[in-house]
Length: 190
Ligand SMILES: CC(C)(COP(=O)(O)OP(=O)(O)OC[C@H]1O[C@@H](n2cnc3c(N)ncnc32)[C@H](O)[C@@H]1OP(=O)(O)O)[C@@H](O)C(=O)NCCC(=O)NCCS
Image 1 (tube, helix red, strand yellow):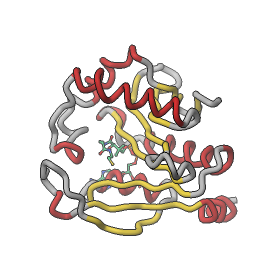
Image 2 (cartoon, rainbow, N blue to C red):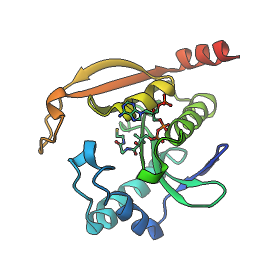
Image 3 (tube, helix red, strand yellow):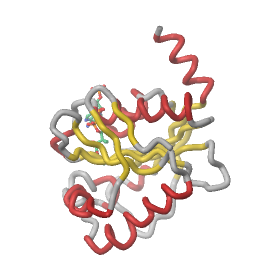
């Protein structure tokens, strides 16, 4: 079972119950949460009672996937997290990619570096057939990371969220990368 992944600058590891403070702090930055909740922080009780338990149960169901705490390799500093897991239990080969990083870590290519490494492992070692990612149409940073990770835009859609946040009138976008496309990208890059 693989519970660890290293890239040039990152270490990705599983979350543990001791990580509550890190997640509370991450989600307390209104800029980090802007295109997720409109800026609202995640309460500590929700991190402890819902967020982490959901991560732990998904590790049990799909041991090689899940939410990954991202640390800077040299300093060990917590940078944020990546998500790489099948959201639909009956479609284990279709994996959703996501990420959330602390603001000081933005703009240094970390999201792209972690995403590419997870995608590579998914297609080469974990039998993944399709990677997809979704974000708000107006979340240009996130869309750029999807593009740089090799995903292509497939559709805009309108989800019926309980709370409308700024920009939600423009809907959400989905990006996809199939295994054959990824292999083609690798060949072209050589
Ligand atoms: C989205 C997020 C993970 C990106 O992390 P990151 O490490 O800064 O990403 P990278 O450095 O790998 O790439 C960011 C790219 O976006 C570009 N970018 C930055 N600001 C931008 C903007 N306002 N509009 C368009 N592109 C922008 C950068 O220039 C870079 O592209 P480039 O390398 O071609 O120049 C980070 O901003 C974040 O955590 N945001 C809050 C949470 C979030 O919205 N998550 C996604 C929800 S689906």
